[in-house]
Each structure stands twice: as C-alpha cells, then as structure tokens.
Length: 185
Image (cartoon, rainbow, N blue to C red; front, side, top):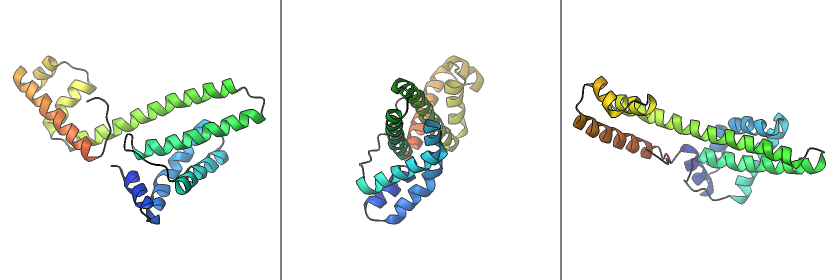
C-alpha cells in the first residue's frame, strides 16, 4: 500500500493529519496535471481544491486496484472534464474539440501511469542482488534472448532458466512489498 492510501485510510478513521499529508504530497503535482488539461493555472488550482473537497465531503471508497495517486488524479481528471463540458456550453467551442482534447489527455494519463510503473520497477530492481538485477536488465530492458544473456553472464541454459525464475520471483516479492499493482511480469 502506498503512503497516500495509508494516509487516506487514517483520514477515514478520523485522523485529520492523514488528510494534511495527502494535500502536502499530492497538491502540487495534481495542479500541474490539471493545468495540462484546462490550460489555466487558476482553474487548475480551483479544480485541485474541488478534488480535495470531494474527498473530504463524500469520502469515496478507495480500492487498491491502482495506486492512490492514480485514483486521486482520476478524480481530478473527471472534475476537469466536467469543467470543460460546462465551459463548452457557455462558449462557442465545439464539444467535439474538447472531447478530442480530453482523449489526448487520456493518452497522456496512460503514459503517466506507465512511467509511474517504471519508477516502481526500477526502485524494486535496485533492491535486488546484482546478478538478479543484471539478468532482468539484459532480458527486459535490453531485449536480449536467454541464449544471448547466458553468453554474457557465462551461464548454462539450465542455470539461466533458474536464475530468471529466481530473479522474477525476487522482483515480484519486492513489488508486492510496495503494494505495486502490476498486470504482467
């Protein structure tokens, strides 16, 4: 479970310091993300406040399907989309243009989540022993085959299979400790 999730859970249990931690840790990044959608820093700040207000008043349920940050940014994104829809009704901008803009932002959000996953994986890799880190790097980041990696690491085919299995297991264990939600490993 990431820090935001534990802080939110503490807030739901009545500890206001949990909410203060969430605001401290996520407000700046959320403002920048929302500014990328609405292209107005003042509006982005208002939307950030609205996002936290929604969390305080409605206390939506958080499931650990994604990281807390992803969940929070999704709430902010939905508020930004609602804002754009309201603005489209008042302005002459077509809703179709705004939808295309939101779809572009959705693609950016997917890229952001992928980047966040990479950061978690790299952090977990640093905690592994050198041999595990080396084999995973060669196979998954450099795209080498097991045969090519076995030549580099001077291991037999059987040793490589065992090493890859143990390295994946160790990485999975490290990621599980961080509460990382992964789709493929």
